[in-house]
Image: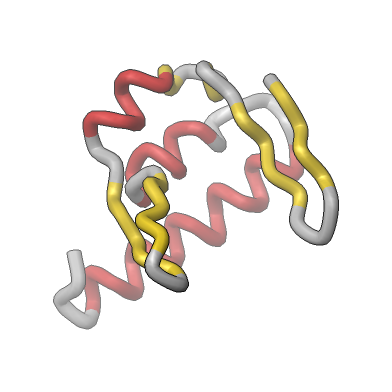
Amino acid sequence: MVKVADEVEVDVSTHAWKVTFDEAAASALYLEIDGIEIPCTGLDMLIASEETYREQDAADRLRLLELKRRRAARGGG
């Protein structure tokens, strides 16, 4: 893993716990910010990447699961 830190901290990794880069890339979403297309992982892959033994990841996973529940409740999947 490579950590890039300046104003914003970014982790660059080819494997996040049990999610591989190829798995995440297959379900990638693309956002456009200031004319630049940014790939990002989908919510389900992000949740899977937080399934670790670390306490902070457990807290993050709970927040992500709540976000998923809210999206589903309003019909956003």
